[in-house]
Amino acid sequence: GGPASLCRFRGTLVGAVLGDCIGGEFEGTEPEEIPLDRVLRYLDGLEDETRGDCILQYSDDTAMTRCVADSLLTRAGFDEQDMARSFAKEYQQAPFRGYGAGVVQVLKKLAAPQLSDVYQPARAQFGGRGSFGNGGAMRAAPFALAFRDRADVKRYSRLGAMLTHSCSLGYNGAILQALAVHLSLQGALALPQDFLKTLISEMEEVEKDKSARSDARALNESEFPFCARLHRVKELMERNNVSIEEVISELGNGIAALHSVPTAIFCVLHCLEPREGLPDKYGGVERTVAYSLQLGGDTDTIACMAGAIAGAHYGIESISQAWQRCCEGAEEADVLAQRLHNMHHRAPPEG
Ligand code: F2R
Ligand code: MG
Ligand code: MG
Image (cartoon, rainbow, N blue to C red; front, side, top):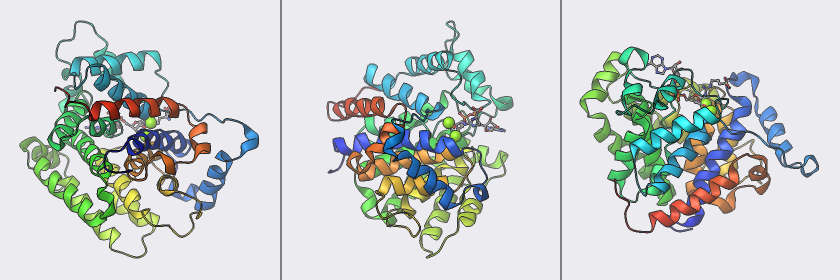
């Protein structure tokens, strides 16, 4: 499909659910425990027609992405009160979705009817430093679908993440993920070096901010930490052979946004071409998800974010029907994507 086509919208949200559900199987695993043959055996099992519809459950990644999409649609734009209430209600109804240990406190506080400042519970996290987890980034894709204008994608993905993540290393990860989906939807992955260049220049602007600089200092990170990681992505892309160990040591595979969003972007870029060891029958989304799983660590979230960016590039047509049938919430994600596509092509939503 062309830029911002329906097929790309559907690919984005369905790709994200697939990454979450399939990646969930390996979350927290050491990479040496998941050699490629184990990953491929597992993925082959999803294609086995004789086992009927196997339902892999989605986790917090999809639960919160659905809240974001639903709130943006219902309110025809970003409404922090509505989105906060939606997160709290979703958690109350299904607390078993594998939420981060810290964010649960925020979600409980957001349920209080008398709460007026919905950003306050997030600010109180981790002794007032706020969370740098990837929970804001894992649910950021719908912002890229709802808003056409790049400045709006950045503005609202930041505010949406700040409802739970007040540390800039958390919410800036959400901006980076939303920007990656936004660019991919426009077809920017056709020129991977330019795609990366644009992300770096956008993030330079974002990370100039005073709080970003002081948060990076307080956490002993380099200045412009996301830009620094994106430069490492560029270096890794320029090399012929990159081992899984090198990707993990250069970019990370953990629960922090800084250690997972650039990693997800690398997975997409690395899998733009067929990869040795991955079956030729795989489309681009399958290749990307299969590669992400081998990194171990926070596999549901890395595969979810990579799946969204890859899905925006390749579109729904490239995604295996068998995989879709296996994943809880894939059909609902498809419906939300179609509604967001309508919204995107109508008048710009109010902020
Ligand atoms: N929570 C998980 N996985 C753990 C295993 C779950 C298991 N399957 C189960 O069901 O029990 N996955 C999900 O959490 C990640 C998103 O987390 P989020 O929303 O960012 O949460 P939180 O609590 O804010 O941050 C996560 C952890 O990061 C550390 N951390 C964050 N900020 C910190 C700070 N300023 N100082 C120190 N530590 C900080 C803490 O350990 C937090 O608990 C996704 O992977 C999702 O899939
Ligand atoms: Mg999860
Ligand atoms: Mg995770």
